[in-house]
Length: 287
Ligand code: HEM
Figure 1: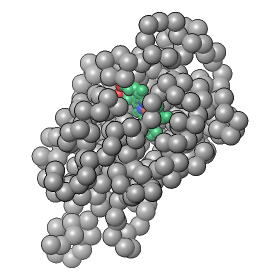
Figure 2: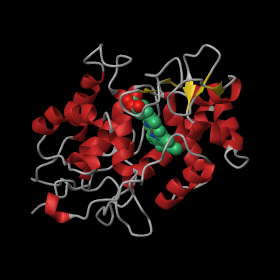
Figure 3: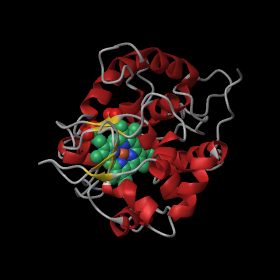
Figure 4: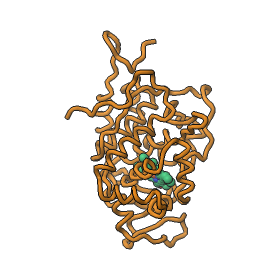
């Protein structure tokens, strides 16, 4: 069959910009949802569908969209992501030619940019596995928020990231919040959880953090009690190899945007068998 991602003369040419547009329209379609935007949960869907990648076995990753199925859909780490998948279902119905795996990642890239972040290079080419076409990923491939720097490195080195990329990716926590009924943690990292910026790094370095006294899981809070950090966030500040990148991104938003876009794009491409000659970066859309 003709490859729908190549287009060409007389062939069906999928319009990915039309998909982006519909996703953008959905972002603030329900002002009662969380902080008024589905953007953060869409970014989290793109990350969790990709973050199962293991470079040693070349398994996991966004290809396949295996989070549609049990057991992955019911992993504790994926609690709440049903909201994001449900939101995108009508988009899939409107553009049936796009794979779920391309749609979920494109929606994440679109959300970052729509919330004021950098353009994230994205290309199509993922396909969806049928239920009998793959071996389920083992649980435990995504990180736990109450753990330390070693855990963070174990998880992200397994995907093929270095320390600088780990810190850049973590800056996504400038978006969204923790939900007691999803992860057990509570609160946002910043006061502007629907705007993509380097505020997370500024809060991490400039605010004062102390252990939250409560019956819930280990987390940190600022003096106001409104903002939070996970232990894995604090670990970036405490680890002497992570810290220089934290300091740099707190001061230099442009460097953060550039490094985040590259690392997030790489994350969403892990393990995807793109056709030879396909280029890693789509050009920024003309404005
Ligand atoms: C939310 C953990 C890395 C993007 C969360 C939540 C936890 C968490 C516990 C709260 C979930 C909830 O209760 O709804 C971690 C840990 C990480 C990590 C332990 C690494 C050590 C990342 C990365 C990205 C990311 C690499 C993206 C590049 C997000 C976003 C949210 C979020 C956007 C907000 C979701 C929402 O508001 O619904 N993360 N995360 N995280 N995470 Fe991470």
